[in-house]
Structure formats: C-alpha cells, structure tokens
Amino acid sequence: MLSIGKLGQATGVKVPTIRYYEQIGLLPEAGRSAGNQRLYGRETLDRLAFIRHARELGFPLEAIRDLLSLSDRPDRPCAAVDDIARAQLKAVQARIGRLKALEAELHRMIDQCACGTIRDCRVIETLGDHALCAHDHGPA
Amino acid sequence: MLSIGKLGQATGVKVPTIRYYEQIGLLPEAGRSAGNQRLYGRETLDRLAFIRHARELGFPLEAIRDLLSLSDRPDRPCAAVDDIARAQLKAVQARIGRLKALEAELHRMIDQCACGTIRDCRVIETLGDHALCAHDHGPA
DNA sequence: CCTTGAAGCTATAGCCGCTAGAGAAATTAG
DNA sequence: CTAATTTCTCTAGCGGCTATAGCTTCAAGG
Image (cartoon, rainbow over all chains, first blue to last red; front, side, top):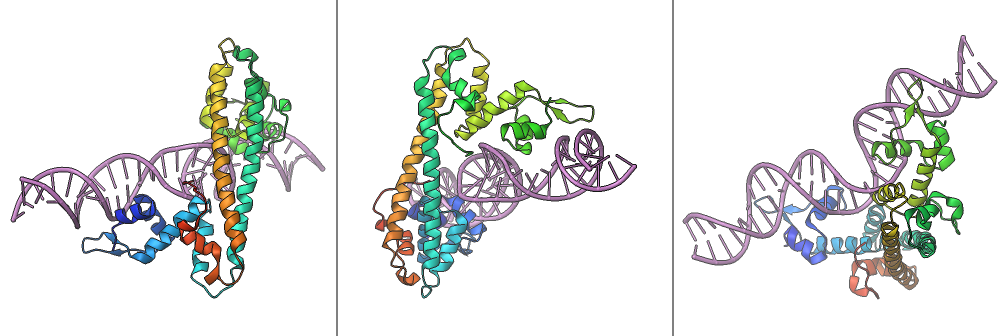
C-alpha cells in the first residue's frame, strides 16, 4: 500500500492534484490508515497513471472520465474509444493550425520592425490596425 | 459616441468582456450618459481594437497592458515592444512543438487500433502504459 | 522513549480570461 | 405609450489545478 506522496512520486502527479481527482470523482475514495491517511493499492496506481498519460496527451478530464468507464467494459466494441481519441486528435490539429497562423503573423510583424522608436514600430502599428494583417486569424 | 453594444459590434468584443476589461483597468473608466450608461469615443474604440487584435494573436492580458503603455510613449525605442512580441512568438512556437508531439502520438494510437473490443483496444492499452509511447511528450 | 521534522489532513481562496445569470433601470422602435 | 431590447450592477462559475493556513500523524535518530 502506498501513501499519497509515494503514489504521487510513482505517477508524477502532485499530491494536491490526486486529492482533487478524488474530490471530483475521477479517483475512487481512498481507503484510510488508522490515522486517517489515504492508502492506495495497485489498482489506483494504474488508474492514476492512465489519467496522467491521457492528460499529457491533452484529453480533457471529462473525456478521461469516459475513457475510464469504457475501459471497465472490456467486452464492448471500442468504437466509442476511438471516437474520443479522434475528437482529441481533431482538437489538437485545430489548435496547431491556429497557432501556425499566429506564428506567421508574429513573424511578419517582428521582421518588419526596423527597431527605431515606438512611433514607427510596425508591431504596435500592426496590432492597432487589423487591416495590416496578411492572413486571417480568427479569435483564440 | 457609442454605446457599449455598438462598441462591441464595432470591435468584435463581447459586452461583458468590455466591462471586464474596464474592471481590470485595461480600458479606462468610460464616461456615462444621463442614465448611467457607458459612452465611448474613437480613442477607446482604437484601444479596444488593439486589445482584440493582440488577444487574437494570443498575447496574455498582462503583455497587452505593457504594449499599451509602451504605445503611449512614441519617442521611446521600440526594443521593449519587440521583446514582448518575440516572447510571444517563442511561446507560440513552444506550444506548436508540444502539440505536434501529441498529434503524432494520437495518430499512432488510433492507427494501431483494430477496432475490435475494448479488451484489445490499443488506445486504452497505450494510455495505460506509457512505455508503449514512441515519443516523449512532457506534461501539458 | 522521545523529539523533531517531514508528510499528511481539511478547508478555503486564487489563477486566467472570460461567461452566465439575476433582477432592475434605461433606451429605442413601432 | 407600450413593448422589446439594451444596459446596469453584482455574484458565481468554467477547467484544471495551485497555494495557503492551521492542524495531526508518521518515520527516523539520539
């Protein structure tokens, strides 16, 4: 059995985050020692490692909740799982696309700046006048 | 003079957001009509358009605050402006890099899935065992 | 066995950048 | 003049934690 600190070390999840996950029901309520401290077994270790990995891949907690409940039903078809993963992939790709547009625009702005006074600064000027933008870049 | 709603339409910023910007001091306190409603002139319109554009480019509000106060000092050299812009560019590039790693990993996971039952699902399996990952992908 | 310091506990508040809601007053269109 | 829309203030909530305060429990050393 692991204390919350050991569990955190083993999974790379911070202690307050583990308690937070328990609070929102992503982890089951932990068993307690005689002195009321949380104790964890292998099952929770695996579950938390799963959560951590999914978080690293950017899955929102709600999606992780769904993935976890799906993983408890091994006989079901895994189409639902793939749907969630593909949705996440799409979300990631959308963010990449958007960020690349920002990157291009920032580059352009910075490259045009002759580094004189603020009066002549292309960065300030471009920010002040959207019409100076080369590309579309919708709201963040 | 514009009402808050017109200002919002003109700049593409939502009404509560305008009030929020005023609250945090990003916009000056607006003048008021006889009936206590906010009225805006061209100056605030320009300032808000500037803020909107910078937000679209992902600048955090604090950076925008700095850019605005710099833009009020036209005689100063614009190195400080460029520093802020370059920092933002770096931040954007870092996020792109990270997201691309996620994208690759998600792709790999999804492509390996034979779409049978959850028991054999590579997505679930990979999430559960970080060692199955091809690439490093640090915390989000 | 006793002390010390680390690690644990609960509860609350804060971070960013908004967004949503309530309930009331002002304005505008017909 | 009425009805619909807009605006007002205030408070609370979103995601996903993180930080603080003030306490208790535990593990190791002397």
